[in-house]
Image (cartoon, rainbow, N blue to C red; front, top):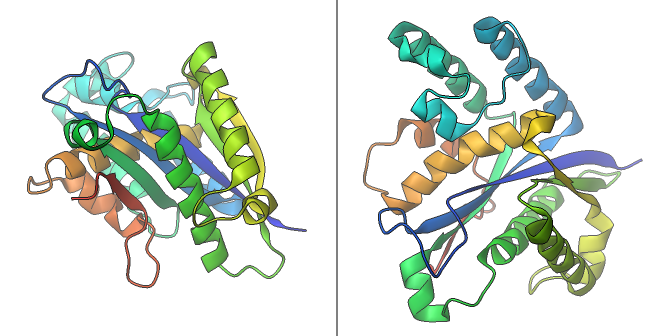
Length: 249
């Protein structure tokens, strides 16, 4: 029996190339890859943390709400609680054996100058995540083989249908580096899940996406959150394949 892995995918920024915030001219898609065992361990640790601070597992971790101290995160206005909470989150994100990160960031201004405004940058980014996820799984050299479930947060019926069509084309055609047969032998399913389902893997992907995006946008700024998760970014043969930037700087 093949070993089961999951890739949870979330975004930071919007994919609009025609009208975007000039102070945040970037779109990132980030995935975290976990084995079934790692996935169960993450759920336990995150739910224990939620119970510690809220007395329930029902709170949904969302990077923007945490930063704004809103929608259930008002307790973070208390600086002592905020410090304890961030320490708890950092302890989870800093576990180097807990998950692996693959990401793709689109620098919109440079992208438009080079490629124009007509491409679907979400779909393009997803193809890079899928490709690198397969690279990573092959690197593990698991004797019985692996199968991957890709879990994406729902965005809207139209957007999800467009993405599903792109994924089906990707699955049928493969990528430049990954053949159709290789791709199909790895991926078991591709699912959309609403945020309300409270999926821990999607919440971790969300927490990872923002510091990665900030690092790509402003690499010289101090970014403690990125430093904590940086060891989990996928590398192979000394190359950091899990941090894709388009166009390449």
